[in-house]
Length: 250
Image (cartoon, rainbow, N blue to C red; front, top):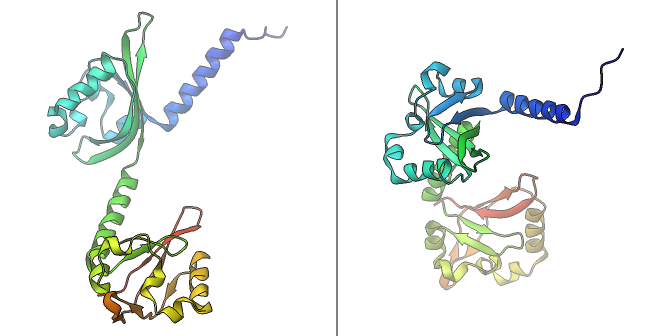
């Protein structure tokens, strides 16, 4: 005789169990009492932070934070918001692993309410984004280094100036207010700016072509600047060009 079909309640419970199992496999999860004491943590979280379960259960969340963050009044308010007010929190958080290294988490803190409306516990779901943070920090450092050593101007798809750094403005003899919102042709000889070659120049950039050559440009007061700029394509993740940066060496 075949087994009787599962009741709707059993199906729902099984579905919930499957969801919880999937989350447990893919995310770092830790549970807290309303006051921030640790109730439990899954293997992903323990491995990420370098702890055994016995070393964290019963302890406060505080050791995962820098001493400065833990002493800040906003940290106490953070737990009042979660444990007393039952308010959800989501952000990117810097935390400390057991060996003192920084771990960056993209996480949500989710208060679980009882039938009486009071917070019973707080569950945190987290993803490790440390590698992304380090890559971004390295990229930003490189951009700062370029900005300090190169003359850079940015243009939109149509060639309108979006911004320019101090080196570019000094080389060209303009203030930022004098160039933002104006077209790149202000830096070109009038005959060239009206030419088919100039139209082709921007058509090639708009098509996403990287261009390096020697370009003679007009600086302020009608003088000519004969540096060698590189016109660089900045792209969306899809590969569509969105802006360019002209960066001649000083």
